[in-house]
Image (tube, rainbow, N blue to C red; front, side, top):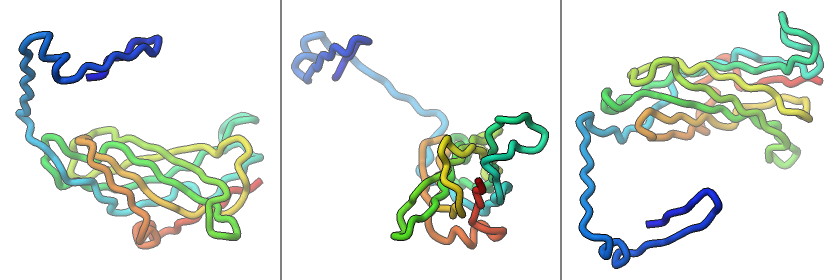
Length: 171
């Protein structure tokens, strides 16, 4: 067992140290079952296809940071009492001439109603200060269900996003 205080002081207790404190019992119960099935991505849509770093979004004031929106449809076939897609993130990559990411954009989202076998996750994010203009392609999608099972989707993104996988970031 490791115990730490707010000042960073740490004490480590081994089995013999804990035995010296006397007998202790911990009981764990689970009335809801368990879920070991990761969520799946059914389809997705980049709702924002172009964004201007120099122009505020329509209906907002000067200096408002632009935003990028996307929507994912996710399923989770695990135990319904403890399953259901819960959070997601998407990564966009501006490739350099060697195929590495020169810059990235991240979108994050959380479901409104967890524990559903199928749900929509709306995601949003803003370019960071100093964002490099260019055509950003989807790099990956991360999904996690309410039980903590995770999936990272990197392949077949073009099929999962039939309306396109590019967001154009303009100066």
